[in-house]
Image 1: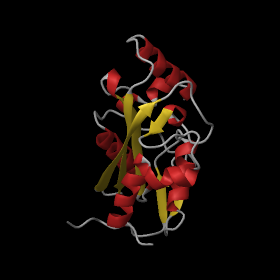
Image 2 (image 1 turned 60 degrees about the vertical axis):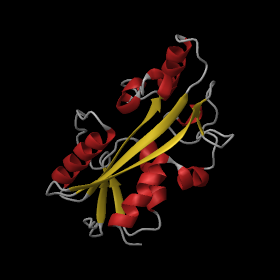
Image 3 (image 1 turned 90 degrees about the horizontal axis):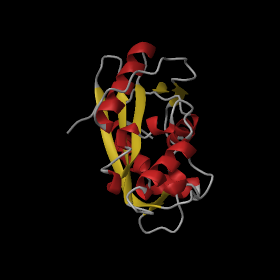
Length: 202
């Protein structure tokens, strides 16, 4: 199967989330791409109307590539909690509200588990990464990591739900983990390794 390759030069990262941008810049450090965020270019944020992580990643990548005229990389990722029927899922960021306060989002997860008499649950992170081109073409890859939830939140590294997610086989949450260790095995890293192998040159 052949994939369209990134031609080099500017790559727009279709995010207004500074934490996500930092993580992607660290992942891209060894590769030939000049990353600039949609936020830095003052691009509008499209409404995420997709029903899956892949659909939303492609929607955001196409929108940024079309408006900027450069290839664009979009990430759609979220936490899926088994006991909550997969919620918050694609609504993970929306659970943090207008101010993107993930303390509020983590407390909502804890509260909804408590309403079921639970203190924890198996959970997993999903990340869909889509490389979009100005003509509308996309190459999209998905990664997943399984684990469980821990409360209260632990650690100040990472972002989003990282402080309550304990990856399987580990004793530290993503919020406590050294970034290099997280990048070696996270859901985003797994999607990223597929993307790099298919579309990028070192």
